[in-house]
Length: 184
Image: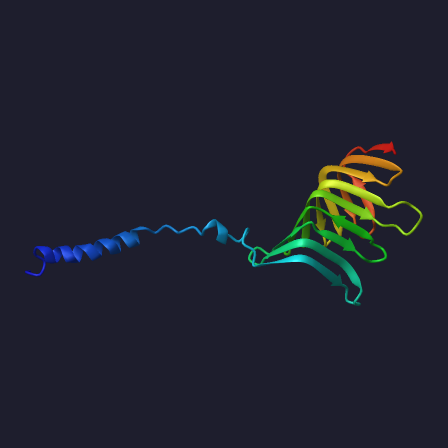
């Protein structure tokens, strides 16, 4: 075997070493942070307004936000300074916050930062405002709930409690703790 002598064997070992080194490294490379699905939206919109209609063509709810970012892979939409309105005669609610996260699969909206719910009434009663730091709205059951501090204010009295659940269809609110009330 004359072909495996001296320098000739070296020329065979160099490519073999590269092949072995390449196959030896079986680790999976991580994607850079800027490519991760949770901080790289598929698209974003500025100053958006979205209307939803029922089967009869009547407006049911409206979303507006300063910036809307959509993530197709994780089925989420993030909004900055969102406002949400229920527009049916039985439901006349307005919700605003600093941030919102809409999960398309669970049909839930998570609101954060100075969340305010205003119930507009047509009767002579003053409008009521609920304030809290966080709120979750479930569109399938048409309920809203939080475990954080809640303040209900209607310009006549102020009530505070920790946690609440609201039925958006029946326009009812149920507090989860003892309620402290004071007249304004």
